[in-house]
Each structure stands twice: as structure tokens, then as C-alpha cells.
Image (cartoon, rainbow, N blue to C red; front, side, top):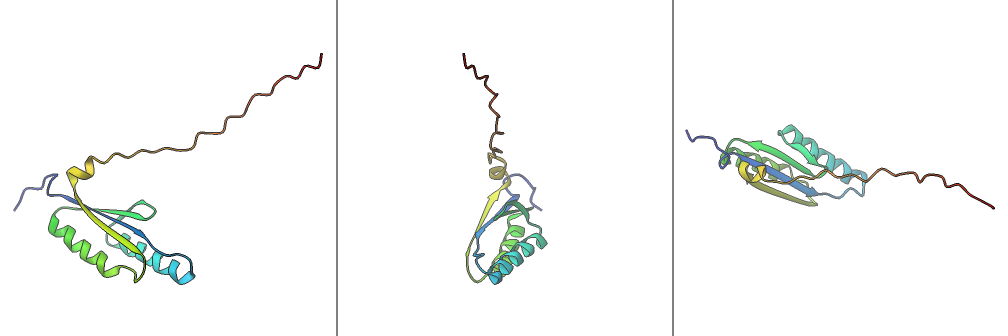
Length: 110
């Protein structure tokens, strides 16, 4: 048995852009997301899902499952990276600054 290390352990990143203009499109998109969750993926961003896999063989099995559930239209990308590569990702959380109320100014007439 091969030793598990950060170069053998894999992450699968599934990112997609699916049409949502009709009720049917939204249902198909929602079903795809639901099936990703059922296969152990987690939502990283709205259209980006990730899954940890202990080996490349396990990652290949999950990639095959994703290919089997892909919707008939839209774009789906699948990226496989090592745990070492995933760990070097830089993530930034930013938000809009709170609106600062301007202080009232005193009006002088004379």
C-alpha cells in the first residue's frame, strides 16, 4: 500500500456555468448541484464545488461520476490538483466597507 502524502492525496474542483433562463433550466442546474452534494462535494462558491479524495484512483472514480451527471447544455470544468497544490491556494475574503455617515455641519449665517 502506498503511503498517503500531500502529493498523492487529490482534490477535485468542479466549476460550471449552466443556463438558468427557464424553469426547466433552473431545475436541471439544481439537480446537478444536488447530485454533486450527494457524491460528497462541498460548495466552495456558488458554481464551484470541491471534493477531497485519498488517491488519484478515487479521484478518477468521482470524476467519472461527475461526467455521468453532467447536464446536456452548459459548461462544466473539472480540475484535479494535489493536496500540496490545493494547500498553496490563496483565498481572500473582502467585503464592501460600511457606509460612514458624514457628521452634520453647523451652518452659520452671520
